[in-house]
Amino acid sequence: MKGLRIALIHDWLTGMRGGEKALEVFCEMFPGADLFTLVHLPGTTSPTIEQRQVKRSPIQWLPFAGRLYREYLPLFPIAVEQFDLDGYDLVISTSHCAAKSVVVTGRARHLCYCLTPMRYAWDQFDAYFGPDRVGKLGNRVLRPMLAALARWDRATEGRVHRYLAISQYVARRIALYYNRQSTLVYPPVDTEFYVPAAPAAAQSPVPKFLIVSALVPYKRVDLAMMAARRAGFGLTVVGDGPERANLERYAGDGVELVGWRKDEDVRELYQSCVAAVLPGEEDFGIVPVEAQACGRPVVALGRGGALDTVIDGETGVLVSETTVESLSGGMKRAAATPWDSDRIRRHAERFSRRRFVRDIERVVEETLRAPAGQRW
Image (cartoon, rainbow, N blue to C red; front, side):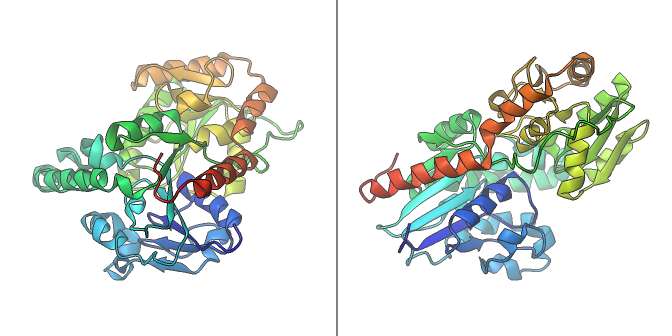
């Protein structure tokens, strides 16, 4: 990579979720790369990312952009096309929205680590902008706007030379919406940080399940909270987001919302929980792998990325339906099963940071050796 000018593009930097954890490893792999993003809220990501000089779009300077950046969604296409990437040989975008649509020169190679084609523009509009969330008028105004955004997303798929998918589920979405093939590269999980508890550590005396999640509609945290109460289990929900006020009504009887916690605290919660719960359909779902790295099983909806990360009966329980009854039954099964912590841990090690770095290095080398302009 010596002598190459590299640019990293990320949609926005306002928290440390799965996409930012992949970006963090890209920053470690390419310490001389420049970092571009639509909006950066300082102090919300890891020190590895924060120490970079971040090049931001004009959206950064709009009123309350750090908190209300999603409200400027219609401006994202214009903003992302303003980044000046003329001097770069390799562009790597980590994208679930607009980052994949940056404009690169003819000599540059553009790799997109695709977290997913944008959900709200393609197949989850109602989950984000249904009448019950934004009102009937908001729904009517936003529907053609998001349809136009989907058309732009499709029209700009050719700006990427090679797509990398984070799961088989996302690979199918890339094929469906972009009509492109992709290379599967699972996201990096810090399996050296997330480890099982020491043998002497005590388990929670009361069965307690765990959710670690942004509180947004498609995560279906509400179903898990209702399922835990129905089954008589305690549930700790770590996370924050626009759905928190709505979720407060399901708290009580051992079901609690605790906001975001430090990584060390989350690790302890993983280590002591009966199981981590993934109630919604995820593109990959890094939380189940972190829990398994700590030797704990997962209760997950048997769709999406969970099919890549959870082995039913060996490392967790896959439920068939997005219902309170199905999740409740899955929790009961998880609580009654004698799990093999070592077996669960070995499975999680397939998703380590070391494996991610090796896979990315191979893909970058292949892409740079290919003729300029080749698309996979």
